[in-house]
Length: 305
Image (cartoon, rainbow, N blue to C red; front, side):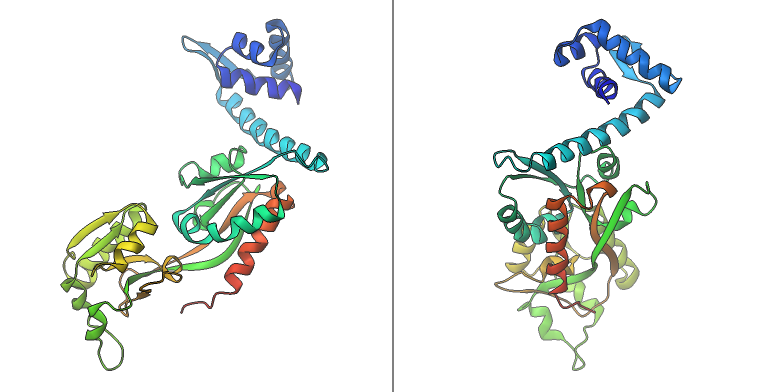
């Protein structure tokens, strides 16, 4: 383990000299650690270039495992020192916009009351790097669409909490609802009579708005607002005549006025949503407690058909 952690320091510093200074050991001692690792694996781990030391392809694979082991080691150390009330624990969360804006804010306070020494890092979701960062220990848990982990490493666990439905939505007192048919349905062409807001943090919503409208209505609606923030998008919908396509779970708790689905199917999509985490994290008390809070929250919400 010592040799592996020394390899991590070399790669992070890009130099044996700087890594030796960081670790407070001699450079020859660091070179011996590297030689022992390369002898054990039977392959070179580093290559030297004009810009310093970088990992070989196999070295990068070894480093990925080292990063994961390093985080697991840190969590084990925290558990062993749990009797020390001043020792801080750290939970690194990456979350999609729905989880970040709507779900987790209501749960994090309760989590911190249960674990007063827990430091929580809540990060915006980067879907391209979420899986590598989970596997290498830079993130402990990802909350969002489970489809990003459908074909990935078996070391990751998935826990589904809900199914998110994308729907056309508007404020409850929108004039559009005065045009409902006696059976409660709405002529789809009515959607073209009002301005639209696109939630642009996720490109899928812009694509759904444009392509679904062309397929169903024959042309693109008039787009007046684009907004990257989910909370701001909901606020703008409450104060304007705009329509939008949003996940239903994001608007169920909006108040003053409420945001509700429009009775027209347009680009409807369902996404499994929940948590993805490394297997060894499953019984770590803070994460275990947070997952239980999530389960309780969604169990209390009546599903929308």
